[in-house]
Figure 1: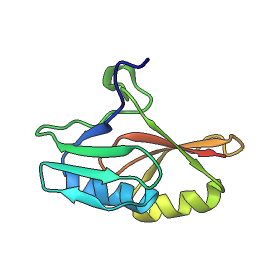
Figure 2 (figure 1 turned 90 degrees about the vertical axis):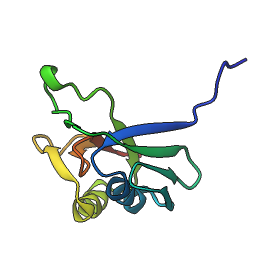
Figure 3 (figure 1 turned 135 degrees about the vertical axis):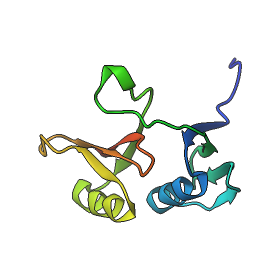
Figure 4 (figure 1 turned 45 degrees about the vertical axis):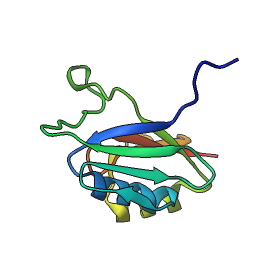
Length: 119
């Protein structure tokens, strides 16, 4: 027996509409909401939500003084192709040291870390 079901993962950010648009470009789905809260129903998956946070300070990866607190692992078929697409959508690389790994680290436009992971 479970106590609860996960409703959504919620990311604080300065602009929920823009960040939901970024993740819709990466994961699919249609963002719904306004400038304070946007829900993104991901096809075949969990919902992501984006909440306006005044004074938002993005995490710094890796840094103990501004911990990432959480990150998203996104599974992809081809790392190189997926990398081009997320960069075109506004992501920026956080770790380009080792291209032989099966994962790569980026920041979304609001600064939240996420990884592209080879399937």
